[in-house]
Amino acid sequence: MKETTSSKKTCRRFYGHGIPHVKLETLAGKLIVVEGADGSGRSTQIARLVEWLETSGHPTVQVGLKHSTLVSSELQKAQQGNILSRTTLSLFYATDFADQLENVILPALKAGFIVLADRYIYTLMARDMVRGMDEAWLKNLYGIAPEPDAVFYLSVDPQELVQRNLAKNAALDYWESGMDLGLSRDMFDSFLKYQTAMQGAFRQLRKTYGFTIVDANRPVGAISKELRKKIRVLLANR
Picture 1 (cartoon, rainbow, N blue to C red):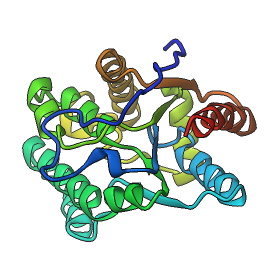
Picture 2 (cartoon, rainbow, N blue to C red):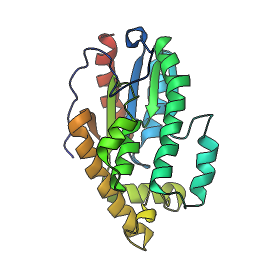
Picture 3 (cartoon, rainbow, N blue to C red):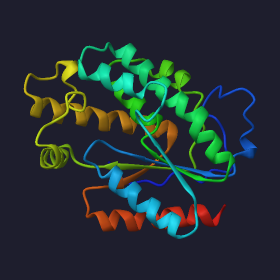
Picture 4 (cartoon, rainbow, N blue to C red):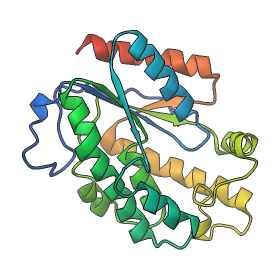
C-alpha cells in the first residue's frame, strides 16, 4: 500500500445517521484512531502516544475492540468456541462499539479528552467485507460513528505479520487467520491469505474514509516519530 495523508477535517460529523440528540459541536476533544492487524504494533504505538500526550499535558482515554462492559466478556467466550456465524459476530462487535461510543467515547470528547482508539469501525467493516457481508449494510450499521480527527493504518506485510505473531504468541489466532473462511486447512497459509484479503478491504475502505497509511515494517521509533509529527499538527489546529 502507498502511504497517503487524509485531507484536513473542517468540522466533526457522523458517518451516517448518527445518534439523536448528540450535539457534535460540543465535542471539544480529539478522536485519534490507530488501525492495523495483530502484530502491526498498534498497542506499542498507542502506549507511546499516551505517555507523550499526557506528559505534554493532554488527558487521554483509551478504547478498543472488546472493551465494552456490556458484551465484551460474552463476546470473548463466544469466540473461544469458534462457532459464531458471520452475522452474529458482526452484530456482537457492533454492540460492543455502540456501548463504548455512548458511555466512553462521546463523554470523553465532550470533556475535552484525547480519545485513542486501538482500532475502530474500519477493522470491523474490513473483517465483515472479507467474510462476504454487504458494504452498504455495514456503512449503515456503523452510521452512528463520529468521524475521527485522525486515522492511522499501520500496514505490515503479511509475511512479516506471521513472524511477529509467532514470536509473540508461539501460535496464530484462529480468527486472525481467517480459519472460519475455509481458505486453507493449514493455519499458516490461511493467515497469509486472510491478511492479504484484509489489506485489500482496507484499500477499498480508504476510498471512502481517506485514512492515513503508515508503513509499519519500519522500526518502532521511526513510526512513533511520524505519528507524533502528524498529531502535533492536529493539536496545533485545535
